[in-house]
Length: 326
Ligand code: TRP
Image: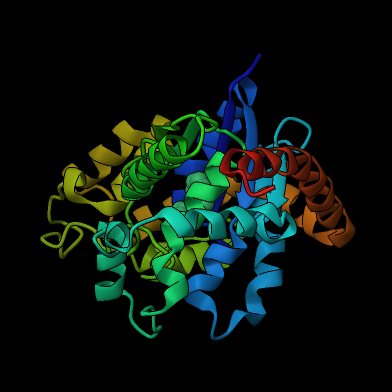
């Protein structure tokens, strides 16, 4: 029997190259080895986007299209929307009974977000409970493995602590999940910061060749290479790091252009844009086909929610029984 795995993403903006190479490539591989549940974490998105959630339905639709276009297969993995499966909120509430406030207040991601996120008031009751809902997501399926990026590790640690507390207080019904750390390839945004929705420095998966061209042109290269005749240092150039990932067969050639001042940065960028557009072409085609048929994605989510619910309704029954409240 395969082990169960669960992961989720918040629908808060377009999926970009960072997601494709990090999470999605990994999700696609993992679906062969595990019973996978891939969740649209719309309640989690609302915890920060509550003031204006009107873009969320379209965002969810596009996110699921991006997942499927990149290789996540609804025949192999259960794709569902968190708010369609009521037991997530139910278990979230139950866990909130037993989670001490200081566990949440000292969570490093919580403190960081309060400090860093601008333009949203995150000092709410709901946002403090973010990791409790995440724990409910994971343990409802008794997931053994949770693929996540390094930034999510504190949430998995908290999940494990919550599991130990629940099991100790009532009855051993939940396994402690393990993190499967996703290696994120070194791909920085146009401004050389981490590629991220909040920095607006990303190349989205559905980007047209035109926009790819503009974004690549804005990328920072070797700041010491001012004229074409200056010799460049590819190892500090962001454009070069993209070649390495998306067009590895050109790596040697590009290095030579740069180090020996044979091609200017603008031309080098133009060629990268072409290569990138070519790389994304099959993906974009599939994505567009999927987006044409709104009913298809709705159907995938409906079927996913049914499968997910068949598991979660059983778990919640066990929870009530373990606690002795029914
Ligand atoms: N917090 C995760 C993120 O922002 C999303 C998420 C919600 C999640 N529930 C989850 C990830 C359960 C793994 C497991 O990336």
